[in-house]
Amino acid sequence: MTTPTTGAQPDVPNTAEDILSAARALVPALRARAAQIEEARRLPADLVEAVRATGAFRMGFAAEFRGPALTAAQQTRVLEELAYGDSSVGWCAMVGMDSGLFATYLPRPAVRRVFPSLDMSTAGMLAPAGRAERVPGGYRLSGHWSFGSGIAHADWVFAGAHTCTDGELDRDADGNPNWRVLLVPPDEAELIDTWHATGLAGSGSMDYELHGVFVPEERSFTFRAPRSRTGPLSTPDLQMRKMPGVPLGAARAALDHVRETARHLAGPGTGRAWSEQTRVHTVLAECAAELTAARYGVYRSLEHRWNRLEPDATQADLTPEERVDTMLARVRAFRGARDVVRRLCELTATASHPLPPVLDRRLRDLETMCQHFMAQDQIIQSAGAHLLGGTPHNPLVLGILD
Image 1: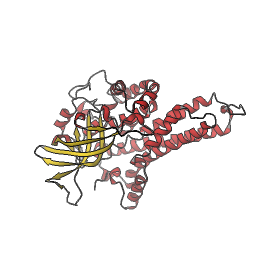
Image 2: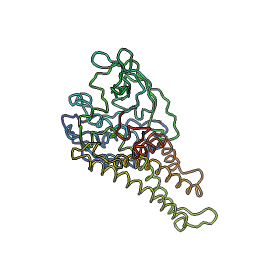
Image 3: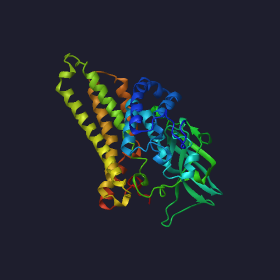
C-alpha cells in the first residue's frame, strides 16, 4: 500500500511495459519458492509485497486515478508472466487486481476513501451467498462464502449478497432479487481454513463468514451501474477477461520445462536421445500448436473487444458473435492449457516416474483451475444459447444481468 490515488509514487511501475517487465523479473524468485508457497497454502508475506511492487494490483485503475489504465489484454499478459513463475501467485494477482476494476462501479469520491493506495488487493466471492439488510447509511451483511483466493493477504474482502428490507428480499421490476457486492475490511471477516486442494494450493482460497457487519452504502455497488455507461469498462464481465492469463502462463511454463529437459533425456532401454525421437517431436509440436492457438484466440478476442468498445460503444453495439468471442476463447485457454500439460506429463512419464515436481505441480494447478465455473460446460451452453437466441445458464459471462 504505497501509492495514494492523489499522486503517483515513482518506485512502483505505472505503465504496461514497466509492470510487465517487473513481473518478468520476479519469475526466477517465484520458481525458486514454488514448493514453499505450496506448503504454506498461501503466499508468504514478502512475496505479496514483491507482487505489489511490480504494480500488478494497480493494473485495473483508470488514468483518472493516476493508474496505469491497462487494457484487458495487457492485464492478461502480466498475469500470464506471474503464473509462468508460479500458478498460485498468478491466480492471487488475478483476483487481487480487481480493486481498480471495482472502482469503475463505486462513486468517485468513495474510490479515494476506499483505495487511498492504488496497490491494495482484494479477495472474495461475487456470488450472492449472503444477505445484506438495509439499515440507515448502508447494510448489515451476513453470510458464508467460499473460495476467497488471496484472502489471507487482502486489503479488502468483497462479498456478493442479496439485499433485504425488513427481512424481505428486494426485487426489481421483473421479480429478480437485488444483487450487490460489498467491501469490508479483512479483520471483520472470519476466515475458515478449508483450503486443502490438490492444485493452486498456495492461493489460500479458504471460506469466510461475516456476521452482521455494517457496510456503508458507498462501499457497495451493483454491476448494473458502472460509472462509465460506454466503453470497455462499462460491461459487467470486465473482471473475467484477464482470467485466462493464469492457465496460459502455467501451460507455457510446463512446455518450456519439457523442451529444455528433453534435450538431455534418453529413452529407457534404448538409450536413444529424445531429441531424435519422432514421437517426442510430434507431441511437443502439437502441444506448442495448441498453446499458440489458445493464446492467439485469447489476445485477439480481447484486443478486438476493447477496440470495439473504446470509441464510446456499448454491449448493444456488439454482434452475438462478438459477445461470445472472449468467453469461448477463455474456456479454450483453461481447457487447452490443461490438455497440453496432461500430454506433456504422459510423454515425460515414460522417462521419469514419478513426474518431476514442476510438471506434477502444474498439472495439479490446471486440474484445479478447470474446476472453476469459467471452464465448465455452462459457459459453452451460454455461448450457444446466445447465438441461437435461447436462454443462457450463466448470463453474467455475456454481460447479461437479468
